[in-house]
Image 1 (tube, rainbow, N blue to C red):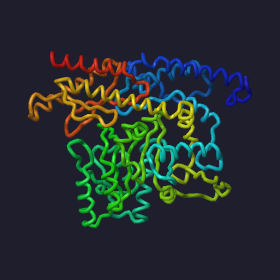
Image 2 (cartoon, rainbow, N blue to C red):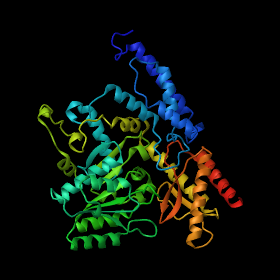
Image 3 (spheres, helix red, strand yellow):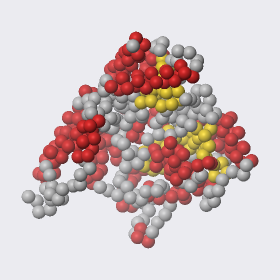
Image 4 (cartoon, rainbow, N blue to C red):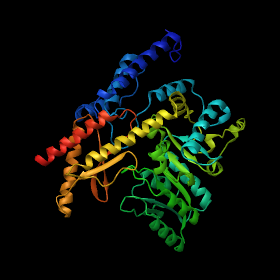
Length: 479
């Protein structure tokens, strides 16, 4: 036995690695056959949860046994990596990104200050510049940072906007967004010191987009009342419906009113790699900042977010800070310190999990996969639009399709009965465990969603999903 158990020798490392790799490969290879939801009963799930609440032992255990326990825990979950996950906005997780992350965590380089690992910091900077300039169309000199997710990206953008437009006096600072904005937008504003009463919900048009005329009127009225409008947040692919706000018009308004223009493109941003996405998402070029989530439409592991900004100096001014203990850290030339661009100082090199897949597979592979998701969503929309019992309110902008049970008449009571039927329909659909959908509320109506994002979801699983949905609707009408 090695005298230092925390330092296994080469043979032990190889054996441990083989055990983990074999399990990961087996699980990944079997994803298409795995249930989309947990197969455990509520009682079995509760017992399993309790078993994982115990503290660690004084003496070590067997890796095989511990991995078997981890498999149990992983099975007690939505299968977010599989092709049947059509709920929320899936994050399927590339195998190549997992390999990158294994390497990354093993070499364990520090990512907050570029001078500590300058070449890896440059690698990460290359990923950010690609996202800012090639994907989003921001000008030379733009940049940003990788984050733990879209929520942290939106928070950093809000802090930068607040610092740039309000300075140290936050009184009267006012933010504008819509009811379909991700909840992290309002949360970020509150965390940044903005009063909840000054977070405005802008009305939306009948096609569920932010109304530019309404927000213009709200900004004027707030200025007249002595408030200080400083941030307009549009969404490029809402979580509820996948809808894209009218970005060019909102960008024009933001320039006229001298407010910071942020686009939450956590879901939709990377669809700009496709021709259809670029057309639908015109206006990114005019943004001050953009939230992206590579763990959504770049298929990266969870925990991979990004913020890109037009003016890196504005991000730096809002977040810079130092201490005497950092006096030995020198600047690394053209590569900025990510720890001075956001709230986190210590973090891993996050760019590797994106850099390796992008360089290994090439951007075209991602472009093709995203085009496939758009095609599949169009197919879902066309099929469900032909089902008489359903309302399919809108054609998808991106890869989310919403639908609901059609009421028998125009009364409120009929709508309530239809909504209850929709709840039962979702339970029956998900009860098959081959797919999992989710729901939302759109203009007061219970609405089901199909979101096609996983890189492992192809026509065969969508065809099966549509068969399940239509069969359960027929069952509802004949019951």
